[in-house]
Structure formats: C-alpha cells, structure tokens
Length: 433
Image (cartoon, rainbow, N blue to C red; front, side, top):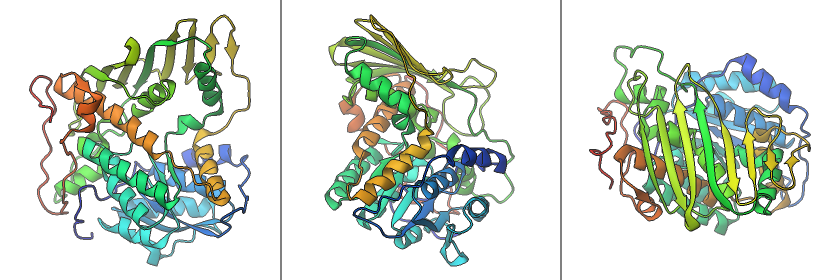
C-alpha cells in the first residue's frame, strides 16, 4: 500500500463487488441507448479515469463508455488491488476495444487518486463519499471534467469545500455532473414539472420514504494483522466518517426529492429521531432515522428511513397540496397526480443512471458543460442536517448545519496507525458543534 495522503478527505475504497450476472443485466438494459456523437465544440477522444472500483464505480465506467463512442477508459485507481482487478476484468469483457488500462495506469494505494487525475480528461469519482471533497478539489484544480457520485461529503466542512470547488469549476468551464440519478428519470422529470406548474396547488406537506433492507453489512471476521484503516475501508458503509450514515449515503436520494419539489430552497430547520435496533456490525451508524423538516410558509416534510432486514420496504414520494395529491412510488408503473385534472405518466421510459452520463458527455461535446454541483452539495447538506438532528436529539437549523465545525474525516490517514471507531451517537448526550 502507498503511504498516507495529507489532507482532510482522502483515500478511496470501492463499493461492494458486483457479480457478472448483475452487471450483464445492467449492460443489456443499456445497449438500447445510442452512443452520443455530437462532435460540436470538443471532438477529442476523451480519456476517462475511474476512482473507486466497486459496483457503482464499475457501473459508472460502463455507462460512460456507452454514452459516448469516442471515449476510452484510460486509468483506474482504488485502495485495494483486488477490487481494481475485478472491475477491470468486467469492463474489459464488456468493452474490449476501449478498456485501455495497462498495468502502468492501474494505481493502487492511498495516493492512487492523484495519479488517476493526472492522466485523464474526465474523472469518475466513485469512492466512499468521505473522500469526495478532496478528490473533487484536486480534479477541478487539474482542469478535469467530473462525474461525482452522491453524496458530496459526509460532514459540513466537506460540503463547504465542495461548494468552493463547484464555483471554481464554473469559472473554469468544467462539466460537473452529480449522481442524483432520479433527476434524470423521464417520468420523474415530467412529474415534477407538472407539480411546479401547480398541478396540485401549493405544497403543504411531503412524505418521502426510504425503507430498505440492510445495505453492505459486515459479513466476515476481521483477519489477524488487518489494520484499523483497512478494516474500515473494506467495510466503509458502516462507518460514519466514510459513508455519512446510511441516511446520508442512500436516503439522500429521498432528501433530494424534497429539495427538487421545493425548487431547491433549503429547509429552515429539522428535528429527527433514530437509532440502531437490529444487531450491530462493528460500525457506528444508525439503522433507522425519521427526520422532520420545516420549509418557509409552514410546509412540513417528513423522511422515513430504515435499513433493516425482514421489514416492509418502500421508496416513494407522497405530495399533499392545496388542490390535490400526487405520488411517485418506485414500484408503481408511473407517477400519478390526483387533482381536479388527474394525470398518469405515459411517456417514454429510460435508464436514469445512463441518462446522467448521456447528458454529461453531450454537454462536453457541445461546449456547454453541465454543472449541478451546488444542487448536489445542498441536497447533501440537507441529509447531513437530518443526521445531525437524529444523532444529537437537537433541533438543527440550516445555518447551524452549514456552519458546523464537526469534521468526521481525519486530517491524515496512515495505513498502520490506530484509527479508533467513534462511539455510536446517543441523542441528548452527543453534542452539536
């Protein structure tokens, strides 16, 4: 392994390994999307660098190669060699002529991100989100176009760093596309357009759910000789400094639905409850949080989040307005609006993860780079705000969250140094700062 990096968010891991069958299914679902060959302002053969070679990173690299016929996967980086090798094997099988990553451009270790960013034109930031602010900053300073998976950070100092990088990217004319993929679902886009046009009147309340099974549990015993850092990186989802808690890492999608519905206006304040009920896994995150937000005008928005096995699952958005109701449920055929004029989406369907990359590369080719980084950062902060409220038991305002001094990500990481796990938060005892 390489030596320690030196700034506040570093290192990347991966997401969990993906079976060939799963990714083959994803690939089959996406081949219907034609490659974008717009050749407007930028017709170069773009070199793609992948940071974080888990399932999400591998999927993002595949989607990038599908989105544009004149790109190649040029460099890859991960903390762990086994993750990189598994990802490359899969991508090379799917894209044998454009997965061009010889051993000299396969970077492993805590400084792999620096080497990948140096070599590419477009970087895919798919590591655990604790590292996102540092990787984003370096990529923007190096003048690279960027795909950044959600969320943008795991703490408020990280969000503030991201907002600075977003502004820098705009000044440099760089594309910065976030992984809030629901924003690219055709049905959801039309649904939200109609809501914003007044289909159910003024929004009075929102209920968003993210009830799912346990994600990325720790299924193995710690091996003798494994350092604290390696153990936490291999099980990054279970540690708040790396994932932000399941509420920030996954339920942030539901929080983003709120922000979208409320036209990107931030909430005024939030209270929340949460804890861990099912047996722990050695990490320090909650397995359920119920967050209650207030927006201007007395609008109340509620997010129910649970990651527990053998329970009722639901990932949906329910809207209540002055003229009617609307809902967009993940397992429904289409979003519906129940108001004086009822509506059900009946337009074309798409693979939203793929459309994210289609739009990114189209904007680069047209010389009109997309930058939705500010929206990405604000939705992330709204999720962090909910976690803060649950962990502390306090009412947290937007200003408190934005100005929080709590830094979860260590300033420096050393592969062999002790890295104690912070205790599980206890509402009423855990302090806000």
